[in-house]
Length: 239
Image 1 (spheres, one colour):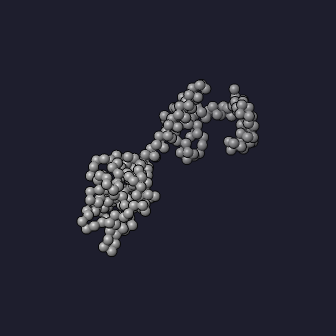
Image 2 (cartoon, helix red, strand yellow):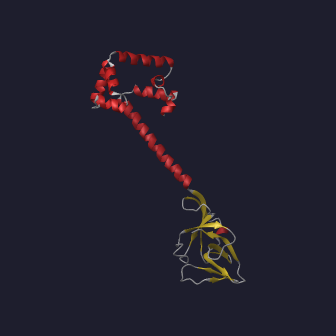
Image 3 (spheres, helix red, strand yellow):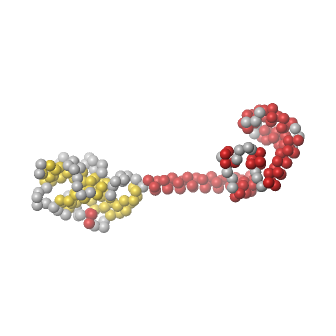
């Protein structure tokens, strides 16, 4: 079958006209029509392929003025071999390759999403012993879990479970408070305190020689800090 016949058959199978092919390929219609009418073009094409084969290059490299990389096409020897082997397959084999390729691309995309998600997560300790009046001192225990979280602020040193509703509505019972470890707070800051050996999550109200630990829930009375009390700041709660 000649070049002309092959193109004609392909046009029929794809329900295309010569004009549509010329427009899609970016070739003047007169040029395409002339190629199809001249039998000598088949011989020329065959010769081009033979020349390229013996020179160890692709037809594209031989015919086009621009380098493959300039056209966005960079094929190494392995890729060229794969393409040649693919062309030798029947329809069943080609379908198998396409299905495998689709699966591998989907798997790669999913893996990349998981890696991106992992990169967004922070590894941080969360103390399980809750910070509230009367509870055990959590920071001197080993009662914590190391978790990966996308909720922890960058400046957070650790997280701690909150027990009770004394800091609602800002901090709910059972939620995790993210804490930046520091030894001092400004008045109005919410922090984790150690008062006489007990851990508390409260707001600091200090000034004029007085100090109180205040709950956000108005049903709880402020805790006045006396000179005989032992109070230590563990860190600032990040809200």
